[in-house]
Length: 177
Image (cartoon, rainbow, N blue to C red; front, side):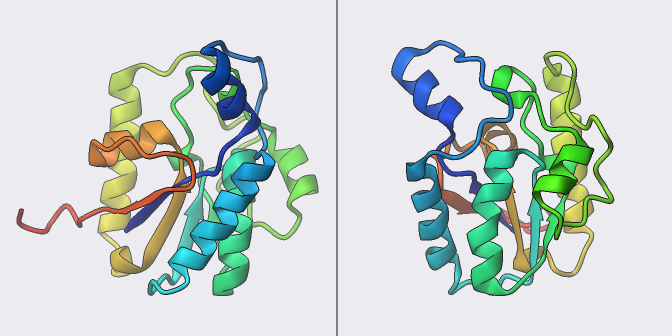
């Protein structure tokens, strides 16, 4: 499975410059973030990806769009890979508004208010990410799955801190080290 961190968002830009939460819910990509998404699409074109899973946050959906277009694959939206709720950018957009903004996406797995209402405890976040990993690991397409997600999710699953637009291959949990 490949994990791709979304491109730079307006939240990332402001937080990186000031260290302060700028109060931007469901932050969209910056122009650099769009460039990072296009670069990821080009880099991933050579991988044998057959399935794209994506967080419902706008920044992740905007990152997924050029990848899906280049690969000719649909995007399956899943809240299981949403960011751990810790800042204003982790306030999502309700399903109704996502459906209007992204009418071609299947939002069947997304409830109206799919994000946490308060800081997500580490143990619950860890349980969510492990359950997601185990669910994907049980499928035969593990090696052909791309997941567009967030910093905390990638850190929890790999122990690595990735920059915006970077990706990493996750070894199947059943593989001997």
